[in-house]
Amino acid sequence: MTASSPSLLQRLKNLSLVAQILIGLIAGIALALFAPQVAKDTAFIGKVFVSALKAVAPILVFVLVMASIANHKHGQETHIRPILFLYLLGTFAAAVVAVVASMAFPSHLVLSTENVSVTAPGGIGDVLQSLLLSVVDNPVKALIEANFIGILAWAIGMGVAIRHAGDTTREVLGDLSNGVTLIVRVVIRFAPLGIFGLVASTLATSGFGALIGYAHLLAVLLGCMLFVALVMNPLIVFWKLRRNPYPLTLKCLRESGITAFFTRSSAANIPVNLELSKRLGLHEDTYSVSIPLGATINMAGAAITITVLTLAAVHTLGIAVDIPTAILLSVVAAICACGASGVAGGSLLLIPLACSLFGIPSEIAMQVVAVGFIIGVLQDSAETALNSSTDVLFTAAACLGEEAKAQRTA
Image 1 (cartoon, rainbow, N blue to C red):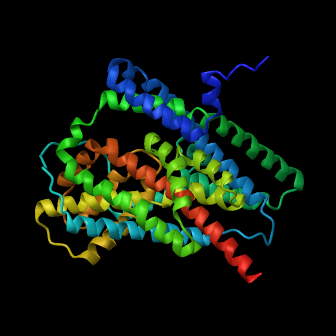
Image 2: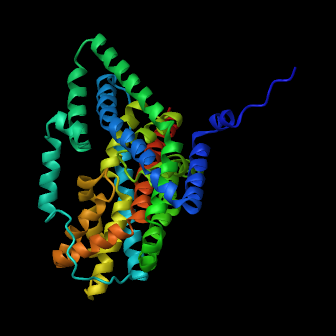
Image 3: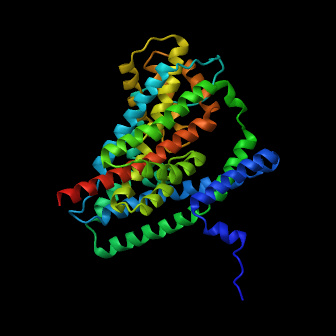
């Protein structure tokens, strides 16, 4: 008697997570096209998935970073410094790309006098003050409000303190970390269903009609992000590894960038990146710190968004600006953007700060923010995909590069 062929559900279950996500993506597009009213009702599925990711991310980061530092053995090598260098280098490279593209293909906006009620920082001092307050925030409040800067600060502090505790305490902390990680894996398994709901409801509700009027601006933004993802980042990885960077680059884009594109939140994608780092065989003590850190400070996509939109306002108003000033502006704004990271559209709130450096009044700058929200369906999704996938890419490049260097000197 021959065994019966596996059912369709069993076949889908046996597929890789990426393949399942692609099926959910295609199904969501099809539902939005052929049954838009039904597709709008799937928004709840997407919201549940994103909410679940956002719910587990703060406690995961807190427990994982604390356990990693507490159980770190003296003399054990980590690669945080080279990763931080790659984060800064990648952000600066993205800023240069955005400046060159904005100068070569200047965008012009139709700025109206309509007021937009969005709260934005008033200056660099305000941003830095906000960052410092986030670091010393109440730990319970930081967990509730997903303040990842405060969470990281408390996790590092607690981890260092618990390193001097007994072996049993550190073992319990390690078991707690494993338990939280298991919950995260369960949540990630629902990614195909969540992305199906996100895609179907977004296309059915927003569509792409509002984007047509800003096609040139979108082309510059998305072109910069694609260039950084497929040319600039691979060049940086090649410089670090001295080998073909595209297998690693494309894997990170495929397995991290896709989910980040649809969740539109670097914070929500932290569990996905941690799982990918584990599958890549990276050093856990390194990626458990570098991934949540990258979600707050690795802002190549934000550098592009802030630079392109700010220079679009500059060109519209006929303000003269030299390239060094533009590059300096974008780097400063991108570094400050860590204060608004982890949430959809966070980088847009830094545009008034960037515009103020050119003497553009806040009334006009807020109109540029409004334009950013109009094109945010694609802009913020692509920005988050670039930011989040680069977190894993640079972490992997630094770990593999340092390991290869150690083998050569051994």
